[in-house]
Length: 220
Image (cartoon, rainbow, N blue to C red):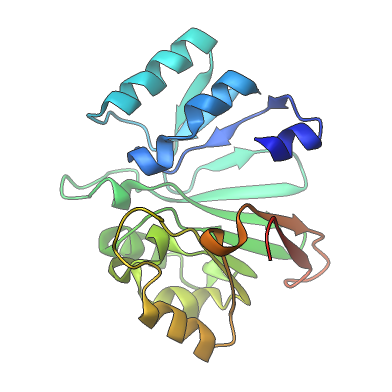
């Protein structure tokens, strides 16, 4: 939130919420209190948690528009920025976990693409892999905090990123990111940025070629 204040930002046209687990939804209520948010995009549906109920109450109280996203939807954030939704599928099997219902976004600005994978696991990954070579991206947000349950090498074979961003859960006790993931990224010379080491990670995109972006962090 301090970063927004430094930039003089008081209003957000919209926020994308990947899914409704507490660690993913937890910060949104404070955002609603401090910034004027016009719209939220999320996976839709319901979730049985007190935090989710608070979320719905806040949307109603603040009169914030809510829209459910499905694969092949697009988000209109201006002519220069193209955002395509790759997950969740239009028809979700009952066995899909909350993680597999995560919103997955492919962002394109100029010639730069970025892939934001939420917390998808096996079933969600299979849905995303249907897009094949369209997944090509300069940077990728690693799914599910770098957990082994979301490690599928095909994601990297299709996306071919130069940079990976990982957001581990400090308090989860699962040892994320998984050492196998870090070893694989190192073997492919993929540069890694981690929120547990670098704090807030900002991506600035210029767009003249696939690698024409920079990563800025709070800590070094």
